[in-house]
Image (cartoon, rainbow, N blue to C red; front, side):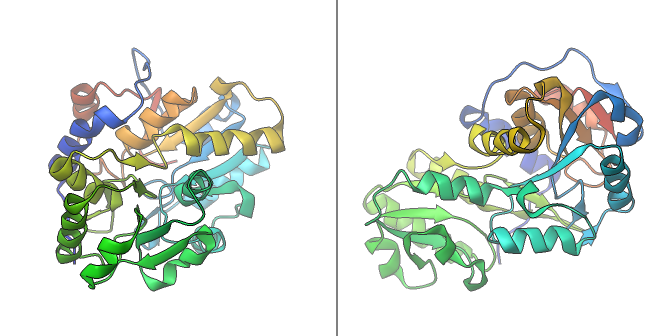
Length: 305
């Protein structure tokens, strides 16, 4: 079982990892509101993170489904944009709907879908070693692969690595992966660049955390797919154009609980950004302190959507 991180540890690591992140400009001030419906006249599309906005762990956040229903009744288009990469597209849609959210299947966009697009730039003959459990349906990635379990030979024979999910990952497997990369370098693709994910009582370590450990140990470049990086936001923009036509970027909201993924990424995409503070990454602390420390400032802040 992998370790969990405290908020302070996670925040410090995100700050160290800023070298891999986009560098957008941020507003000079943040406006405080109570609910997303309160500013409904100001946007046409709301792009919502999942963890910390719609759900925490396996529990839906109270009131979130009702808010989405109200916004949809006012002709606001809703997209869920998540860094969760364990599930394939049907699984990701089923998970969102299982929480009680009425979202069109094409409006659930994950970092895994961005990874799938990125894999098409590599030779189809490559054999990939994938950090993922059996139920991740890695065959939908369209590549040759073997799952990274306990056999050290697997780590040595593959042509590259995909970090998809930390479910069943262990420090022993991490050591095998690091040792194989020290033997000879290969591409490292990260399907979920999150360092942590908020659970009911703790923060779990995610693939981005183990990718960062590999970078620190080996100096190798990591290729990240998902927020805050541009590829997944480009997928969201394409979906918005398909459904809504031309929408000014300032009429699109990126709503999330994380400064370094949702707010930084949304600002880089040109969207207006909204930080939720009650349930996710910044739960139980004064968000203003972390905004000040990072310099990552949202346009709007609210407790829950």
